[in-house]
Amino acid sequence: MSELVLVDDTAPAARLEDRPRRHERVVAGNVEMAVTQYDGPGHPLVLINGLGTHQQMWNPLVAGLTTSKVVTFDFPGIGRSHVLGVPQSMSGFASLVERVVDDLGLEQPDLLGYSFGGMVAQEFAHTRPDRVRRLTLVGTAPGVGAVVGYPSAMLALATPMRYYSRTFYKWTQRFLAGGEIERSPEFLQRTAELRKLYRPHPVTYYSQLYACQTWSSLPWLDTVQTPTLVVHGTDDPIIPFANAQLMAQTLPNARLYTASTEGHLFMQDANSRAIPAIHEFVSADDYRKSSSWLEGTPDEATAVRDSIRRSDLRSLQPLGLYNQTVRGLMKPTARR
Image 1 (cartoon, rainbow, N blue to C red):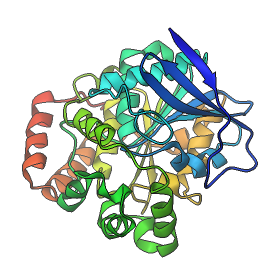
Image 2: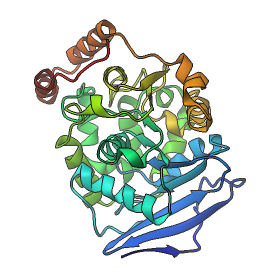
Image 3: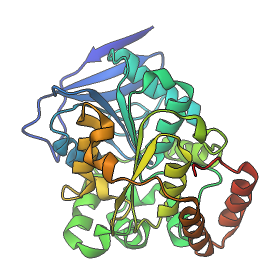
């Protein structure tokens, strides 16, 4: 039996002073997750975080989502959530999202998944299509068979050390994150401080990494009917932009919003042009009339193939070659 336990705790840093919120804990069996609800008159939006990151990383986006009722949470072993109950599969992480949704009484919320969280969101929309109204996939990929990132970026992901050492974080982020990190020392410093606020438990970090390497949405991505906005930076070394093009073309009801010159961490940049686009998509009464949808593009097959080919040439490493082979075997259906 699940139960909702209210606790009185406030974020120790980077707080959103002007946004009413409630801090709660979702408890079910040996799983206990910290949850924050931000009040708003609009439709509920659940944010699913990236690899090893805590919910305070969402602060710039939450500040920009002025009308939505926003829900953020920490997976087990991250932030203020206990380490017990860490799953080792994408379906297991999707079940944790469902537990949050159920305990908060959200019938059909919007989901926004970033990076690893975007994979969880895809799994959730695939296995629970009636539980999602709209889907936003940010800086994410379809799992095994995806276009692999730069070798240096992939090596840096193999360890959670960047969460434990500010020096290691600053050294790796310049070739790991791209975009604003490379242009702004202040942004680099701010994200370094925020990332060290809560360090992920190694069990959770490697469980999430394992889930990424044993899961793929390519066999069924073309069956997900949920209206989807795919948002991606063109300067993302971890998850190349070609993945967003592939997903936007394969999903039957999707548009691609291109965040030009932005890297992997643009959700943590309050000045990102993508934040107003996301707000427009989730807050519009009719998503098809939102500017982000109207200006978005379902990429042409030829353009997608060319983009994937260029990215694959930059990823001539064992994992990249393996994913190319898998992608060819799966042959995801693309819209023409």
